Length: 120
View (spheres, helix red, strand yellow):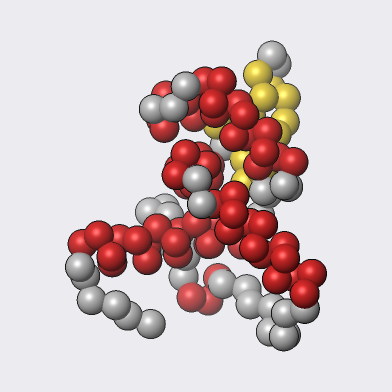
């Protein structure tokens, strides 16, 4: 990933096989969690680097208790992980696939919002 948060095509890891029912259900669960704008924003913020609840609340404009609840859901779904740093919990994305998924969803939205032509 570049400093600007762009993913090069060579950095994308594809798992080339036909998805089974369990994979489809797991992917659907991820999309369900991404369907909330606040959670999507938190994941985008975490794609830029790790942060604690206070930093995420300030950056997202969401209330601290709401951010904590969203992070708890994301942690239970194994999309984010946390580590202790003194008295604070610091959150980060679990894997690069999620980082790419969030980036692509927002890139897709950018085309819809700006009217920029689609590309492959």
